[in-house]
Amino acid sequence: MDVKNRNLYYLKIFMSFINFMILAFFSIVTIVTIQNINESFSARNFLENVTYLPMEPLEASITVFIAFFLLLLIIEIRRKETKYTFISVSIYGMEIFLCLLIIKCLYVSYNGIILLVVADIVTSIRDKHNRVLFLVIMGIIYIFSDYNLVSMQVKMVSFQEILGVYSTKINMLLIGIRNMLISMNILAFIVYMIILMRNQMKENARIALLNIQLQTANERLKEMNQQLQEYAGIREKMGETKERNRIAREIHDTLGHTMTGLSA
Image 1 (cartoon, rainbow, N blue to C red):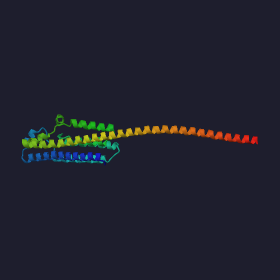
Image 2 (cartoon, one colour; image 1 turned 120 degrees about the vertical axis):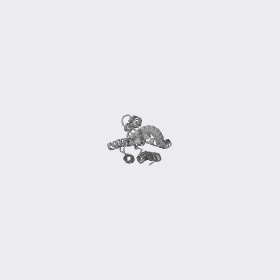
Image 3 (cartoon, one colour; image 1 turned 90 degrees about the vertical axis):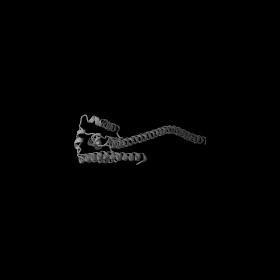
């Protein structure tokens, strides 16, 4: 692995770690909050302030992490796969499904996991048309995986509603931690894309330079071929001249011996 790909690989690992921290944060906050509500016998007040009863938080967290680690496994396996087949297309479909499952279990409170998949798509899919297709699909999912949009059609509890049981200070602290982790993930994605674009520009410049060198070599080879043809023509003319001289000498010698014989 060269330096350019190594930097992108380490950035992808960093994005995976940040996403793990974000998923762990959402899961821990949800589990601890529901547990505190049950222990403090304030479930009735909580249910009065939410629009939807959340599913079992432990079960949802287990589902989220199973889907997340399967997603990382798929990304790592495909990184070592160079051929693009029907199976690899199915794997991309599995990635989309896992992203949707994670977003659903988090009640559309976080969709930054899509950025990790996008970072993987732009480097692993070589075919331009298929890459654009999957990027468009992930972009549509990223745009429409918004709580305000989804909650209009599907009943679900928001992360802000879960944090509503805490005091204002703790609420602001938890929201600040969430925003910081999400911002780190977005920043890592931006850096990843900048490095990828810079590497692509360098690769394009290298290819352009190689094309110029190849064109120069072709022109030089064309000139050498032309010179070789001219040299071959000169050699041919020299051969003809040499043959004429040989015939002339033979005729001269033959006539000379004949005249000498006649004189004798």
